[in-house]
Length: 121
Image 1 (tube, rainbow, N blue to C red):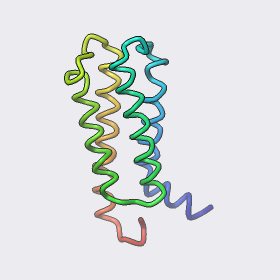
Image 2 (spheres, helix red, strand yellow; image 1 turned 30 degrees about the vertical axis):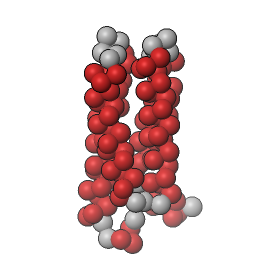
Image 3 (cartoon, rainbow, N blue to C red; image 1 turned 30 degrees about the horizontal axis):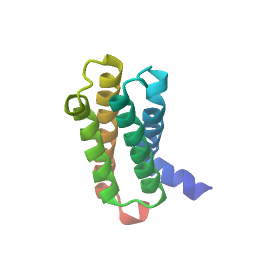
Image 4 (tube, helix red, strand yellow; image 1 turned 90 degrees about the vertical axis):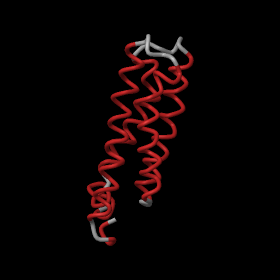
């Protein structure tokens, strides 16, 4: 149990990103944009991918998983304009805020991993 607690304290960014992924899955219902299929599917698909990437990083850290999460964060930020749902304020702001959180925490995890000795990972 102690080893799990230590791993979670080192990988807290991935715990938050796992929660962010679960939030993305629930957001279309909670924020009421399930009728806008493009925005809803973007949240559902990205939510699953973000949650799986974060869970994988928690099990065994690999820097490439964090780079994937950083790219997903960038996609989330840009997706309202690329997919054309900027008219839905809740969906747009949700994608932007969660994208900043996911991408920022992934980059922070990479920074932390490079600073820590290999035995701490």
